[in-house]
Image 1: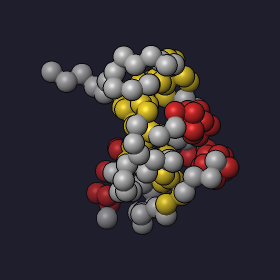
Image 2 (image 1 turned 30 degrees about the horizontal axis):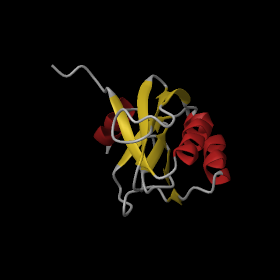
Image 3 (image 1 turned 90 degrees about the vertical axis):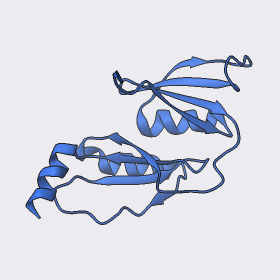
Amino acid sequence: MVQGLSHMTFIVSDLDKMEEMLTTVLDAKKIYDSGDKTFSLSKERFFDIAGIWVATMEGEPLPERTYNHVAFKMAPDDYDDRLQRIKALGLEVREGRSRVEGEGHSIYFYDYDNHMFELHSGTLEERLKRYAEV
């Protein structure tokens, strides 16, 4: 039986730049750094983001950008602060999709290796309720 999410892994060209993005934008806490040792495929670092284990491994970046993404929850009042943090790092913000009022707000942005992230202020329950009203 599946019990939940174990972890997410992102292959990145620069572990330091990804660490800066994760800690600055997503309030990640670094919990492990392999240093020069390789226990898996390459050097790696582990982070805790709101109780989620996120791994980064050194390697080749994604060749292109897509809409595939991972979304982290943020409080509605955090929107402006998080957007400022993202822009301060020089990360590209992607224009969000059109939304139905009441389903929350999102910031979509790319890291340095073409991974897309989203910060979202809504919940699944709110979205389904709103969609049922249309």
